Amino acid sequence: MMILDADKLTVTEINRSLRDASGTGEKVEIVNPRSRHHLGVGILGQLEMAIRGSAGYFCGCLSEGLRLRVGGSVGWFAADNLMSGEIIIERNAGSCAAPGMCGGTLVVKGHLGSRPGQVMKGGTIIVGGNSGFMTGFMMINGTIVVLGDAGDLVGHYMVGGAIYVAGKVESLGVDVIETAYTTEDDECLAGLLESYGLAKPGSFRKFVSGQRHHHYGREGVEA
Amino acid sequence: MCGIGGVLYKGKNGPVGDDLKQLVYGIRHRGEDSSGVAVFSARENCGDGAELILNVRVEKCGCQSGGETLNVIRKLLTDTGGRVIDTRVNGTIMSIRILYGGSVLDLCYLLDQYNVQTISVGNRLRIYKDLGTSDRLDEAYNYSGLAGTHGIGHARLATESVVSPDRAHPFWAYGFSDVAIVHNGQLTNYWKLRRRFERWGYRFRTDNDSELIAIYSAHYLKQGLELQGVLEQSLADLDGTYTFLVATPTEIGFAKDKLAAKPLVYVELEDRVVLASEEISLRALLPGEEGYTVEEPPPYIAGTWNVSGERRMKKLTYRAVGLE
Image (cartoon, rainbow over all chains, first blue to last red; front, side):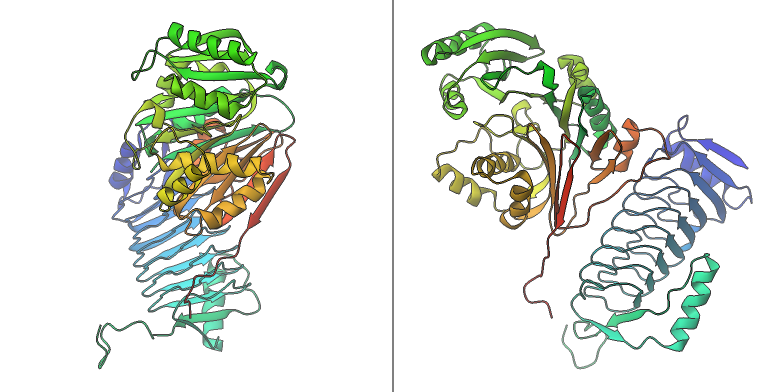
């Protein structure tokens, strides 16, 4: 186990060490993070790491194959452009989590701020608590699962993917429709949540794109 | 991008100056053009209501010397029945304690005619601001030793006006006693609102949009609105994207617009409330990882804490026109 003390290293030095450790099988732990930004960024190989405490902005972003567990909370833009892997946040995450996410899973056991999953292209976001406004703003594909409530404008201008909300939905965004929550959906979510030790609520509401504002690739519609 | 921060001690005094130094230093990456703090001094250090502290810039940016400034102030006070109690100079800011029972607005506008660059006026408010980061500011102005009930601070990356000491934050509400603000964002109806306030007789010291928030807040406080009410109203009146803090002698409040693109987090402890643009700033002041939860207010919300520790918070409902 490699221990990196953020009190004694710069963020650049930490990320360089993480890249060196990726693919070697050695686990890494960061101590004294004190909400520093850019921890675990650009890790393009298999790496299992933990942050003992809270991280700042852009935690785990631009990574492919990273398996990260954050003991505290994270700031804005966690898992930005995540390609694959798994990031688990034990407490809250700030706004704009997982923008442009292409794959992998982001699990936030606490609450999420505004605009999570903005223009996400794939992957899964699971929120144990509430999700802020514009959840799934302009999302293109992927899945967002909210176990608590969702703020205003859920799925605003989404063109693909699905958003599941167990709690109260403040309002829907433009071009979002509610569709049937099927047994298949339920089985799929039950398995997904169980794998992260999260209890599945009785039921969810499922939201998808109404496809009324999405013209690209549709015949007979001028963009 | 700018960084804002604030601290309020519940029912007691605390090392507000030092807290703000650490908070603002913790967000220096959000702007190193200038920095500043507004400290509301400890209760026992305040005189009666007629006692005011004038913080004025001297010996810099075309300002008069300390001696010249003091002569002007003495003359004006003599004419109005007031007097200077004492003075203290830190860096290029002179703090002048005066006894004055007249209109603060009239005094400030008179001082302006004599080219006195007032930075803050108040019974308890002291503002220190200049170019550079908060640690360099403290080297020059030694504000970290100031105790108080609460205060706000700022790290500026200039976007809306030039980099200069008078355009650094916090902005004092020019002409009003004990009202200061720090702001992160842009107001898109600044000129429209400024012209309205100028028609009502108010003056502005700068061309910075943040100054409008200070005058706006002070005006409606003077009209009798509570700070919470002013902040809720500001969400409808101010266009743009912003998060700002307003401090009065008894409260700190915040407003966050409907798009919420400008961050704010806070932590509420038993003895104090600490607010900042980013958690990294809170951690700079409160290094322990456990024992407190960092909260991020949702969009379109206003909240206040008073010096007794009472909190009010209200999320407004926004419905965009034309939504299907």
